[in-house]
Length: 102
Image (tube, helix red, strand yellow):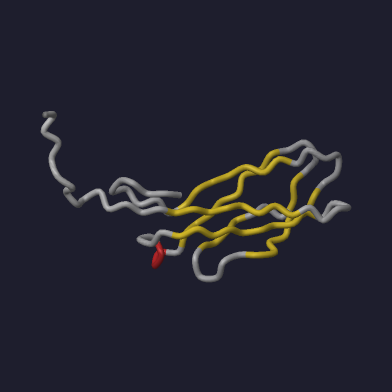
C-alpha cells in the first residue's frame, strides 16, 4: 500500500483461497486499532477463492507504517493467517535537484 505518486492509495484488495474440502468460516483475531478496516467474507466454500479488502482510515493516509492483521479459519487446526501491511509515503512534490548528465 505504498504511495510514491500524488495519487492517494486508500485501499487494496487481496484474495483468499480455500484449498480444503469443507466450508470454512473466517474470524478476525487481531487488527491494529484506528488504522484500517478489513472487509473479510464470513465464509469460503471448498475450492473457492474470495476477495477481501483493506481500507485505510483517512487520518493516516499521510503516514508510513508497518503493521499486520490476523484472521482465523474454523478448520480442525484453527489455522491463522497474518497479513503484513506496509505503507511508505514519499512526497513526490519536492524537488531534489537536477541531473545534468555530466
